[in-house]
Amino acid sequence: MPSSTVENYLKCLYHQELTTEGPVAMGQLASAMGVAPGTATAMVKTLAEAGLVHYEPRGGVSLNPTGRRLALHVLRRHRLIELFLVQVLGLDWSEVHDEAEELEHAISDKVLTRMDALLGHPSVDPHGDPIPTARGSVHTPHLASLADCHTDRPVRIARILDQDPRFLRFLDQSGLTPGSEAVVQNRDADADAITLQTSQSRQITVGTAVAAKILVEPAAGVEN
Amino acid sequence: MPSSTVENYLKCLYHQELTTEGPVAMGQLASAMGVAPGTATAMVKTLAEAGLVHYEPRGGVSLNPTGRRLALHVLRRHRLIELFLVQVLGLDWSEVHDEAEELEHAISDKVLTRMDALLGHPSVDPHGDPIPTARGSVHTPHLASLADCHTDRPVRIARILDQDPRFLRFLDQSGLTPGSEAVVQNRDADADAITLQTSQSRQITVGTAVAAKILVEPAAGVEN
DNA sequence: TAATATATTTTGATTAGTCAAAAACAAATT
DNA sequence: AATTTGTTTTTGACTAATCAAAATATATTA
Figure (cartoon, rainbow over the protein chains, first blue to last red):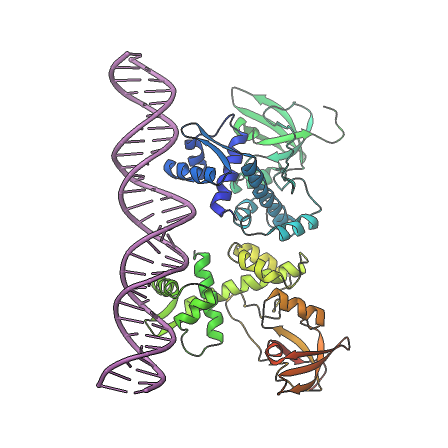
């Protein structure tokens, strides 16, 4: 069995690869993992030894098929647990990420299977992140963000690309949770500001950096 | 935060103290933990350093109030998780012990509190073991076993003192699960055998060692 | 192209938990 | 009282994961 540490490195590499073309640099991995550079190098060698990544000294590291499969399995556990904590135990979506971070290493496949069934084989977690299948595939539909979607058309919040509890509570307060609708009224590039109208008819203005973390899809019944 | 290892040693010490008068010997602790004697000595020193046990070289080890409180907290987590796995996720009572053994170290107090509420603040786990309260008290009613209870009087299975999946499945097959009723018909000291009648009118004969692991209480509505 | 800056890898240490085997102690037996 | 037996402690070594700081390689800039 891979240690929690190994699982965390693989998960981290998976995330980094999503936003990086080509192999992941050691410095990037180290800072994403919050460890010293030398630690990352040492661990990556171990992962390469274990046949989970491809490592080229000074050329970066990338998951190989085995490593990717394992990373996706960890991600599946993580996201199913998050949804379970919200749906079954009634925790707030802003706090489940950190809980899941621990539980994802402790839960067996048997328990996971039961949770999946109880939740009705869900496809996304409380943040709208897609849940990998048991076989290790994820499909991540391409979604626009509030920073680049059409204006003056109703959209539905589909996914939030940030797990920070503070930020998620802010979205809660603002009525910008996955599933809720909104309309982008105005984009002001100079002010770096995006103004939107929520489904509760509230007007909210956010910066581009925040808007870019809120992914949307066309609201139901609207042709885009 | 105490490591899983520390939690396991404390839990183990708690169990050992229940069946030992005076301090626990190193050899006993070592074999209960499945480690070499020297490992137990080293760990016990660490626990003493951390203010969790009282350790007298060559005189054994005992939990102090702090250590006992922590041990009971771990036990509470363990037993609530077991019940949760059975009641909410539908796992079999024979397999939840091992699952809980992992999860007990990963679950937060917040999640535990939710589970406790969802289960209706239960007082026993699926094996009939009492669940310590959040404040750290357990009350363990004195129960007779099938090896020493009255004969020819209906009793209800209250608690099973063994977590071995194989044994638990055997009990399941025999209709001797907590909550079910039985009557001891005969005890044959020479044959080391105890014969009983289950509530499904099946006749079962078990050895004394097994009978001693099955604790009972007077069946409802019967004066004992 | 030489000098400087930046990233990566090595090296030497540290901590938690473990084992095997040697040493020390205590108890029981002769 | 001396020896044997059994338990406990010590010692030396190992693994996984980490850091700090030195050494090295690669880029960038002048």
